Image (cartoon, rainbow, N blue to C red; front, side, top):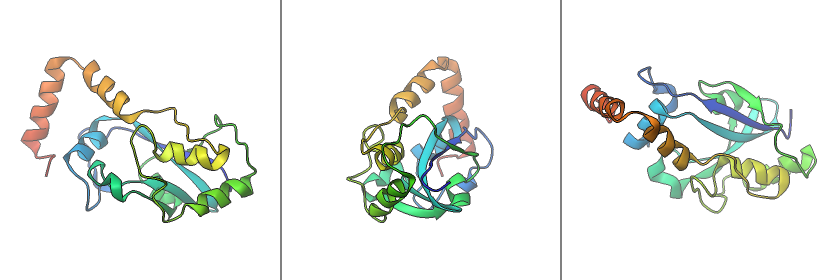
Length: 166
């Protein structure tokens, strides 16, 4: 519904094809995230089948991040879109949509994985506050470090062997 905060949980693809999640700017670190980490991506539904979201094509191009309007299918990619009911919106749905449109094609003061990401953007549209429940870097590090050392070594060897950095 117009003005909803949407999210899609991106599950790790492990050794499945990652084609749907890559683009011309995808680098090796992005491929590791796609393959091994679970994360959420947030946006605002602005009209039927359209979402405004804040994104960066790669961790190596955060300075070029921007707010864009995309079809819902492009936002979802290979995930299931859900409505985030946990944010207590302070604005009406119409105002949430207007706030999202006000940032369209702008950089929302620059992308930062833990201080200014897609979730911060969606929360700002609904509440006026930049808030986030996730912290990609911390969660990624904790997920990676929770694996036994031998498993981490095997994963890195498999990645190198199968050329996932290409």
